[in-house]
Length: 147
Image (cartoon, rainbow, N blue to C red; front, side, top):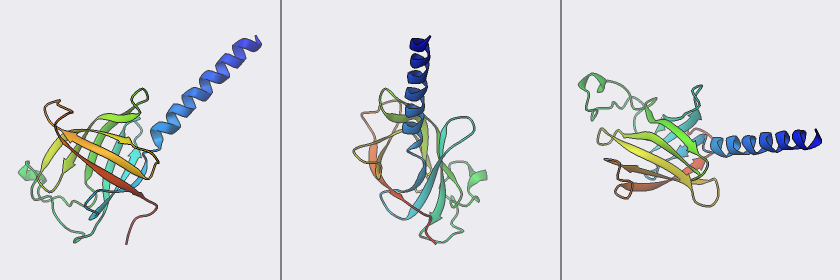
């Protein structure tokens, strides 16, 4: 009985460790250009999303490069640019999601990971399932939204 309880406790602790590792991506991030801030959060469906929370340029800047003409009148501030990421504990990265680039109106398959500490994250966008082809950039964690 004691062995069974010990085993259950170990399984519970290891599962909670995986969940805490998965959630360490949540927070406020600044992309490489430094002209915006994106809040990454875990949605009720268990997936991770990222929403533009601050822009260096005007707050009312529109998504004029969106390939869907009906979406071009939407503001970039508040736009969901990261969608549908799940944590892969074996590879220690968030994958299966997409990143939208409002500068060119394109959406890319994407995965994200940490190299070293939790203050810098690398995000890699790619096309046609070819992860070896694409562009990677480092994002930096910030503690609060700029004003």
